[in-house]
Structures are given as structure tokens and as C-alpha cells.
Length: 185
Image (cartoon, rainbow, N blue to C red):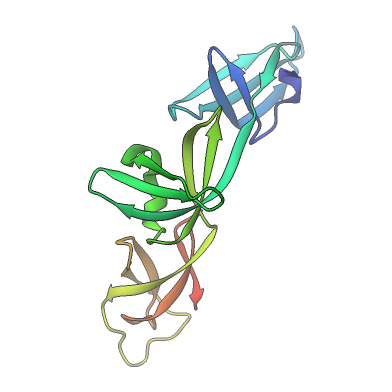
């Protein structure tokens, strides 16, 4: 059991027959009246976000989230199949559950899958990936590394801004948390 006064970013707990993750929190001690905790929480199962306040003495059951590294295998048009590397079991996911992770995940790449009571709810790609640029406008003589930027599409179909010296066929490193170009690989 955890109390509302112990809430921290990233903590998961059970509340109102759902599992929530703390996105942001603030302990408030007004000049008059009792202290309280203001929190922004996200349902890990549905993805809904809500702002709420708690009495610091309220207690919640801690939610145990299991994490597994799984390999992305293929897409059959509707479902996306991931394989558990230990048991070789293939688990299908619908597009809503996979979400933005596919923008950075190729077939045979590894992703982190979060489970709650055996039910998967989130797919997260690796923090940094190296992908090949499939299309970008050609650079012009005189472009420098400190110059502007241009759009580029990588092999997964994701589009991002890259420096002017990047060309089609280059392999670039991308931060998947922000979707930004990091460097040439």
C-alpha cells in the first residue's frame, strides 16, 4: 500500500477499478486548511488522462507492472505480431495498442512490452534507433552542418527534420522519445 503523499512520477497504482500512472504531481500546503496532493494521472489500460486531487492520507494498492523485451515479427494487415524471446510465444496486438512505436520499429527489432496481470497495454521502442533515410531532397553545395534543416523520411515511414547534409541512403540515429535526429550512424 502507498499513500497519496508518496506519489511520484512514473509510479503505478490501482484507483477506481483501474490502473493509473502518475504523469505529474504537486504537494499543496495552503495557508489555511489541510494539505492535499494535486496529480495528473493516466490510465495505463485505456490511455485516458485526468487531473485529480487526493488527501495525503489516502491509500492505494501498488500496481505491479511486468516488463518484457519482445521481437516485432510482422503485420498481417490488422494485427501486429510480437514474439517473446524466451518462450517463442507470438502475441498479436491491435494498432491502437502498438501506437507510435511502429514509427521506429522495423521487422525483427526489439521493443519493450508492459503487462498488467498478464494483459499487455503498452509497446515502447528502444530509446535510440538507427534507420535508413529513404527520401530527402538532395543537399546543395555549400550546405553546412550548422545550417538549416529539411524533412526526411526513414524506412519505417516516419518523417523528421534532419540537417541539410543528410542524403537518401544515409543511416541516421533517432531519439524515439522526442522523434528528433541525433547523428549520422
